[in-house]
Amino acid sequence: MIAEEAGVHLSTVSRVLRRDVDGGPDEQLSENARRVREVARRLGYVPDPLAVGLRSGRSKVLGVLVPRLADVALANMYEGIEEAVTALGYQSVVATTRDDPEQQRRWMALMINRRVDALIVADASLNGGYVDELVKRELPFVLVSRRYEDIVSVTCDDELGGHLAGTHLVDLGHEVIAVAGGLPYASTTQDRIKGLKAALQERGCDIPDERIILTGVTGPDGRAAAEKLLSLTPPPTAIFALNDWAAIGVMGALRDHDLTPGKDVAVVGFNDISVSADLPIPLTTVRNPVRQMGEAAGRLIIDRLEGRAVQSQLLQPRLVVRNSSDPRMARRLNGSG
Image 1: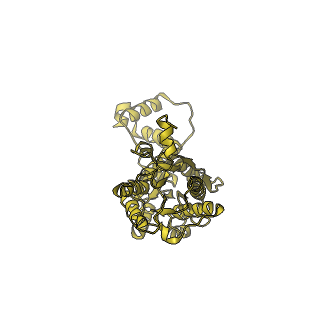
Image 2: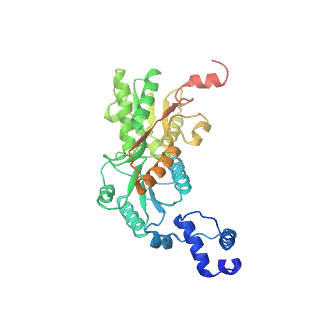
Image 3: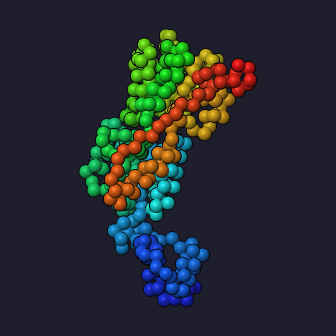
């Protein structure tokens, strides 16, 4: 159809479009080539990545494995990946594994069979799992969001984030502090707890294991953890939820017990998803630069593919204080303090 509308031979169309997708020299175009490009754009022509791969040895497609996209933070991270790789001439395809080992191996095999050039892995486990299998293969990959051993990764400094949360709570005068949510096999969980514990120990506080309830990363998970924590003696005066959705669940459980977040029990989350500032009681949280993390991971894997030296990157978090931990924020916003 392109050849017919442009009034040229099919071989001319093939030559022009192949030069475009293979990155050939941008020499002065003939009038025929200009017409081919114009018609191709008008008809919405998209090159077949498999056909391109057969010619170039590369598909220009990257696979991305994430635990879930219902999580706003992970969705924003993937948008960063997509934007970065598209700008560099690649496409990305994403699959959700739900942190399930069977799904992880299934998607790894499918991505490899579909001839992706590389993988970006956002669901690494401290237990190794399928990432250990990836190491043995020739397919290039990088980790994002979670770290594992010395594999190249782009992560937030989760330990620093936990330290910021702990310092904030102790400075407010809290001594009975607890942890809710999180996944025991994820570096994000373990590093955030490690940072929190370090901040508490620096100020002469401690957090026993019974006050660390790792139930998961959803709102119901946070609510379930809070219910267990509130049954302890003494109950916590502050709860560090390991992500914002778990923190929202914690706040729901507090309200069920006629407790006010920020007044009766301080609550701190992690990630600073967009809804955090708009809750009835705005959530104090550690801002995680997830979109920048995705962009950096996208650029990093392409650097690796194109033979440039790569190394792990650690992005910096920032504490955002709101009413759920510090009622003085509410008084300042209302002009009364």
